[in-house]
Length: 217
Ligand code: AP5
Image (cartoon, rainbow, N blue to C red; front, top):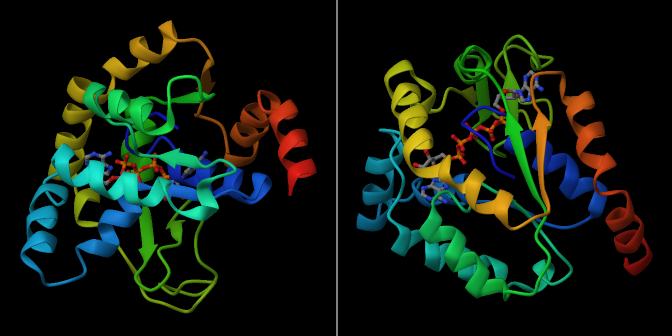
């Protein structure tokens, strides 16, 4: 799942994961769990994330190799937040093998929508569920509907970090669009509408795969 920060990669990946019964692998979520520790590695990762910079490839490569090697990823997976630059795209090809089918969805949104979505996002401290104060508010003030955890605003959802994330996206991640467009199986999705509509567009391109996976499960 490609797209700028706030385009809805996490939201749509979680839906796909439920529909296909395959794991949702988000490097952002894995990293957020890692930074809750107190080790030197946690501190190092945190220093990149809170400024909206990319975490060094070396760390990302070991995280992703470990995760993709787990048993639950054998039938397929939804990748969210990886790859994020051309080096990571090359590494992904090496990990999964050249002949393996990748379907790339690129979520397209305006900067205005990005700012609105990111500045209103709230995340559960316990289970990581995402909310939005306007578009997806929790039932109870500042508490997660699923587990009752307290909701917080991500450090990188504050204005200075958002600006930096958008800059990093344009310089490092946007070139992936050309890279994958040339390789086929690349689908551009209008990510401005509501969640439901976006998911319906994505599913349209996955009809056959959904059928095959359901039969396998
Ligand atoms: P990561 O967590 O991946 O952040 P991101 O890519 O910036 O994406 P976001 O999570 O902000 O947005 P999203 O597109 O997933 O949108 P979402 O569905 O949440 O990465 C964070 C950091 O980790 C990076 O900056 C970097 O430091 C590091 N990192 C991660 N991967 C890395 C890698 N591979 N290499 C190096 N460093 C890496 O939606 C956003 C909000 O909008 C939510 O509140 C949601 O409820 C709402 N919303 C979603 N869809 C809609 C809709 N259709 N209508 C209205 N509201 C909506």
